[in-house]
Image (tube, rainbow, N blue to C red):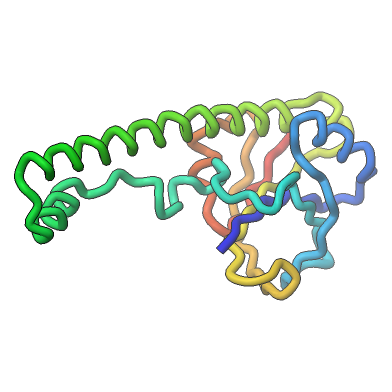
Length: 180
């Protein structure tokens, strides 16, 4: 599965002008017609500049690798392998260290991506072009063009309320409108 993030608009806008603003913040703004029931009411734009948006801060709280491992369970697995007590301690210590290092590098990446989103959404030029913009992500189970997406109604939020917790808590297929 791969995650793709989208920006969504209701109003027709100058795509090239918004693309220029988005690219300054490391976002793509490539129009992409999603296979959705309400596709004629909205315009959707892929934001990725890579192959996908896997590992994005959007919806991070719902990702499989977000939570801390169950260390007791890990210990029991190692005990079943009949490792010595000392070896189990060393392996668990190593796994904890790796988890902490991974989390700290992910936290840095999350903060950097959050900053990018906030700077883009608060850009005055964007506000002059649009009244609101939607943020949506989808976990694709197949190819982009073959996926049918049912967009869930999300919330409407003020751009002042956008922070890392907001971005992490967006649900898959939940369209969140941001009042600029």
